[in-house]
Image 1 (cartoon, one colour):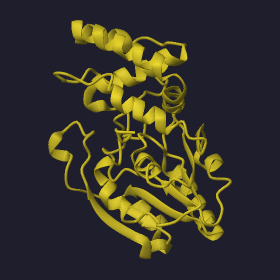
Image 2 (image 1 turned 45 degrees about the vertical axis):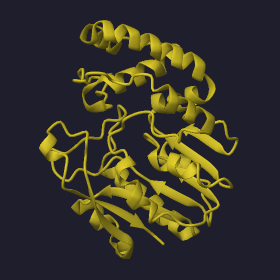
Image 3 (image 1 turned 60 degrees about the vertical axis):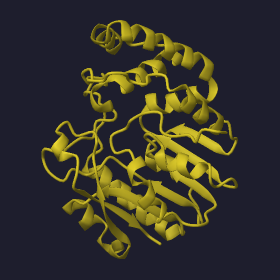
Length: 279
């Protein structure tokens, strides 16, 4: 495969820019890999092409995102054709076509995924956000020549996902992690705990990931630690997260990160995030 697979969606909290740092904290050896907040899959794609003898269990609570992975795996030809059609229509009249597609609600599998990928490539800052009714509500972005199809990468992802060792599911994290055992590696990248009242972005699905969920995730972190699994977690440097994980303080690493999703460009830099590990 000449093209290395990369995330096919721009996802708030995506980890491509932090891969050089995260990679330093990946265990050298592990039996199986679990990632229940898959998102764009930057860490997963980075690792899966390196480690050939590992079984991969990846999942997400966003059903449309999971459907996208499955469709790229199983129906790549039809998906590329649909995206090419979107691309042709978009460049004839970007604004009119964007809002026309945003207002649709296709039922067909390929059409649903094609719509998501098209909107992700053309909406404001590539931001995936839905309202309480599950309706995508992001305005048109300001792009001169968006790469709507990106055929090379879609094919690279397609060929990668053909492996029988990769399982992709639509799960809550507790269901996704119930079979983790000693020697497995778990990467947790949940929606971040807000560091302020105005920083609350958790609407990847129509159900917010709130502090109760952060507490639930911490409970799972502790239970997996007792099982002997190796766990690496990303989150914000917030008072709540620092307090929750204080017993794992020896494994807390502060890292500098930029957030390209922020609508105010001056607020995209200078953020401190946490990596928390139990090994």
